[in-house]
Every structure is written in structure tokens, then in C-alpha cells.
Amino acid sequence: MASGRELAVFRTVYFASPSQSFTVQEDSLAPLEYFYTFTLPLSDASEPNILWQLLRRDAPNDQSLCYLAAALGHEHMHMAGVHLTRYREQSYCLNGRALRSMRLNTALQTPAQLAAAAFFSLLMGILQGLRGHHADMLLHLRSGSAIANHGIYNKSHTAQPELNEVTRLLEKYCISTMLFDSLGDEADKTAAVLRHDPWAVKELDPGWEQDEALMVRELDSLVKELLHFMRSFRVALHDSSGRTVAVQRLEAEYRDSMATGATLSKLAAKQAALEAALEVALEETRAGRRTIASRSVLSEFALPQCLLAKIHLQCFCNKQSSLQEELPTFRRILDLQKTSLTLSRGRSQPLSATPFSLGLGSIACLVSVARLCPLYSIREEAIQMLRLCPATEGVWRIEFATRLCNTIIAVEEQRAAAESSIRPELGLDLVPGHCRVAYYSFDPWSESEPIRASFFQALGSVENLAYKEVNFTY
Image (cartoon, rainbow, N blue to C red; front, top):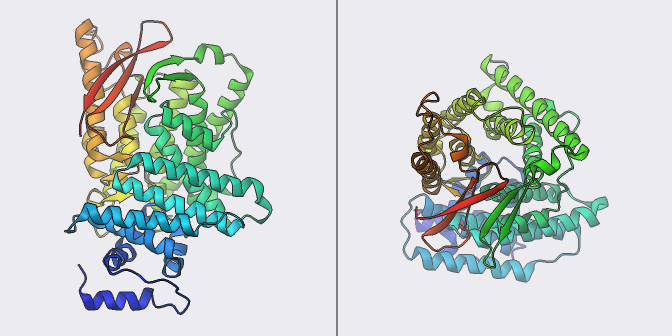
């Protein structure tokens, strides 16, 4: 913790602007110092973006941003293990101060005001994610997306680059929450805000293959398009509390549709182009023609996510492959993830010691491997690799992800054992397809424990999925 003299210097440097019309409370000084010293650099390292530079520039003279920065710094201090007296009380105080200031000072008239309001919502969403308040996080991300989309659609002739960038990040983080529980009631609400046509596939921007940052953005776009497309193949029914009680597959109705075929062809072509470009970038790095330092940290994790998109396309959409045939791809994903997670890149600490990251998606990628791969040894390795990830990434926490993966495997093993259906010729290391968990749904948005999870499995040859409820804590 900084001394009183250091805090005084910090206050003079950052909050002594002649135009400043507000006073920074004493209880905000230490969190603000921590935010500028540690939180902003970590945010920029895990999600490189011009918005963090604007935040550093504007927060000293914007009361709402100042309060948000203090609240973010305070949560980061707690996650990093800094001793804080009255942490919970101070957390609620700083959060409430930021929220009240945002409501009082937000206007929605000019493009600049729309961009600022959407940015406030983005930061509030990140803050609630760090606090573990996922319902509030969703509320702010959706609100920000609605504001940003209003600015894009209605004021496009004067739209600012900042508004476009805020819109992109809000959409990316909304999509990450939908991947968390893709058919849940909350995912439906988020999809309604995003308003994406499941049959639409955007063309790759000109020159994208020359810039790794653009490659990553195009991959984000592919993931969004693929998720919305795959959601159109299943219908989930929810009870009055929002709990998923039934899931029905609709693949048979769509398989022969011309619109489906055209969309699948575009998605597959886009994925193949991105995979080829990312492979070239990786090979150039290995050959020394591209330095590791010049690569965005997001690009290190892009190829594994691109390969996961290919697995979904080939196994669940085109039906051209099976998960068992994709074992080499799962193996490659783990190898790439391990390299990226353990590569130092001049970091002062390994990623496993990082309290949070914003855009890496490393936890979600490993969870997907553990959930989808039929080979026990690869699944177990993916679970073990979770300890190499940052402790928190959006809605994902390592402890929760580990517990979820282990529970899915246990549910599958119990069904296989009950039916005595593991065939000797397959070996005990492979999970029979009909015993797999096809979909899971749970209610992590509430803060109560235990969390109720539903694991859906196929019922014979019919298209309906049955589910088993499991309560677990983490």
C-alpha cells in the first residue's frame, strides 16, 4: 500500500486539473492509484484497445469515470490479495457512488454522449464481473449494447471511432456470456438486444490478413455468427423462473434448407481463411520472421478458438465429422493453449498469477475441450490446464469451471456405468456418444449456493433431450 506522501503526489499528478469541478474522496485515492498502476496495464495487456488510453486521459476530469476507476481498482486490489479493511462495505460504497454518478451525468443526445454512456455501461459490466455479480453484469452489458446500437444505427453519419470500438467490445462480452449458457433464458434476452440475423455472415474486411489485430476481430465476428446460427438449430423451453426445462433439436428441419446450406458454406469458408492466416502468422513467428513481442496477446489464443469453431462446424453443423475423428484437433488445441499460457512475453508474472483477464477466453476454450472431447485423457489434461489460466475471465472462474467439467464427466460416467454400455473394443478411455452431455444449463446469475445445474442428454433416437439436475458448489 502506498504511503500518505505517495498518495499526495498521485493526487497532485492525476487530479489537479484546473478544469476539475469535483473532489476526490480520501477513500478513493488508494484504489485510484492501484487502478492506474496495475488495473489499466492489465486490461490493456489482456484486451489491447484504444479505450483504455482514453480512460487514462479522461478519468481525472470526469467524475463518473473517476468513481468507476476507483471501484475497479478496489476490486482488483481484493482479487490480488491486498489486505483491505472493511472490503465488502467499501465495495458497495464505491460501486454505489459510481452508479449514482453515471445516472446523474449521462446524456444521450450527441454521438460523443452516446459513446460515453455506452463506455460507462461497459466499465460497469466489467466491474460487476469482477465483483461476481453476474446478473448486474448482464444488465449493464445489455444496456450498453442497446445504447451503442442506437448510436450506430441512427447517427452513423457522425459516428465516432470510440463508439464503434465500444460497440464491438460490448458485443464481444455479451457473446461470451451467451457461450456460458447458450440456450438459457438469459442468453435469449441478450440475443434479443444484439438483434443478429442467424443467417447473416459478414464478409472479411479488406486487408484483414495483413494485421493480426484484424484477424482476431474477424474471429470474434465468426464466433458470434456461428453461435447465433447454432442457436437456431435448438429450441429451449423455460419455466416462469427462467430455468431451462426442455431442449429440442431442429437439425432435421433445417438440413435441406437452401438458406442453411448457403450460410454454412460462408461460415466454413470464413473459418478456413482465418485458420490458414493464423497458421501462417504462427509459422512466421516460429521461423523468426515475426517477433513474439510484435504479436498481440489475443492472437496467441486465436488459433485454438478458431479450431474449436471448425469442430463445431464439422461435427454439429455440416455433420462431416465426429468428435472422435477430431481427436488430433483437440490435441492441437491443448498444445497451443499450453504454449500461450506459459509463454512469458516479458510478463512480470505468469498468467496463472493474474487475478483476471478481459478478452483472452482461455478458460472457456479449455472448458469446451473438456466438455466436447470424447477421450478421457485429453479431457483430464484440459481440466488440469485450467490452473494455468487467469483466475477470472468474465463469467468464468477457475474453481467453477473445474467443478463444472468434473461434474459433466461424472454424469456421463454414471450413465455409462448404469447401462453397462462401454464397449470393450472402444477402450475405457472413450465416452460412448449416447452417454454424452449434449447441453448444460444452470443459474449462475443468482448469487445463492448451491447452484442448480441441468445436464441434458439424448433420449434414444428422438430429437428431444432429457435432463438430470445436479446441485453443486464451488
